[in-house]
Image (cartoon, rainbow, N blue to C red; front, side, top):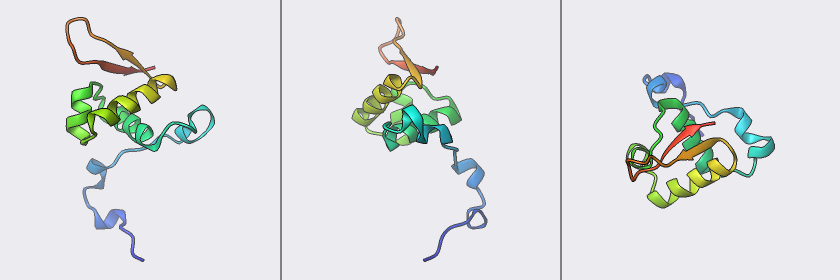
Length: 93
């Protein structure tokens, strides 16, 4: 079996993100892999509204909502409903 390495992908820095290790232990063990990946991507580019998450990452609206609920329940983000806008946005806690 052959694996890709950084040498095989010269633009890896622009196409990668880091997943914090703390997400895999303690209180966050039960958070889904989708929610952990979405949280990690949100940390990278600071995109915090549902429409951007759906467009940027191709996540279906239902999955974004599910992940946002998981992340909010886990205390990783706080959902803020903007008064002047109908689209919810989020911020890290």
